[in-house]
Length: 454
Image (cartoon, rainbow, N blue to C red; front, side, top):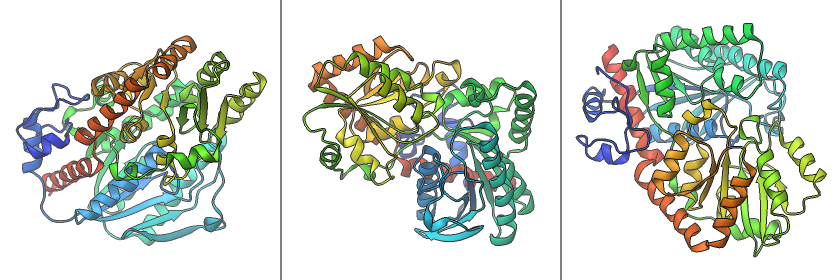
């Protein structure tokens, strides 16, 4: 296994000699690399411990990825143990069934899920969020030492990266391989959205980040832009692998969009939806301002589904503008989310205008495509290339209200084109981003790593 930097699509898995044509392909992502990894894969099952700040019933992208990867690894014969906190994202409210507990063990689809103490805090406010992160870091280390058995692999998945500090320490205590799964580049992302400005704190976090990269046996990134950034920072490409985000298509096969439309009295209108966290990274003020410019068109309506640090400000902004063409809905459960996509005529994926986000791909893009809904993407870089390659939607200039309004009107005026974009998106993720296939590829990587280190 001389080079790990790679992407594996479903087509490559079926034909190991093929060259990837995915949106994340690069000179380092070669079929020869794939061959060496697959030939190095260790036969038999692994004992995998997966440390994640988020896990269902939370519905954000890290929770869904960890849950679906774990379920598929269990299917492949591995023993998977989840170490996570009590659900509280993004509101800071722990559900009643978990209240007052220091730790708890659950069995979910044959997977042991160990929940440990977390200082519950809403997804806003620096001090409380740090307390939220550090409390889980400490409690997960203690929980692992008291309640979990041996491991071959310990994976720590960001965000946030204090999770990976925990995973590294756990890997030492269990004499296991430490894998750093990089979903978001911390602290770079929180600096980019303005959440941290103190240079000493930023420098300290960057030092921890680089320390963890160097200690990892393997770094798994979810976007090629992340791979490129890590290589630029001096991380050897031989220890970096690319397993992109994906989607379990079955979640979107039987949906009931009419149920959502009836609930909010939206029948007959062209529905423009944003479904996800209402956070600083998304610059959702652009959506509110676009709704204001389109308020005279009574056939177009906006819906914003979810919670987050910016939601109260967004609701106040809409109220201040006296907008009656926008509906705010609470966070939907993972089972309900596909129905909201099915109810929508177009789904928004806006991001703040910053160079960092040009190297990321929001995981919601794969869900929107799986739901056969056209995308309206407000981002440049890797995300834009994906949407254009998949022919799955339209793009607009980030934070540009006029650009967003023009694209909405274009899709509203050509429903046939809009539906065709949705169909193309579904076709693309079916071929390239099935979670089951990506989990198999990830499994091969982990088995190869164990064989290399044995």
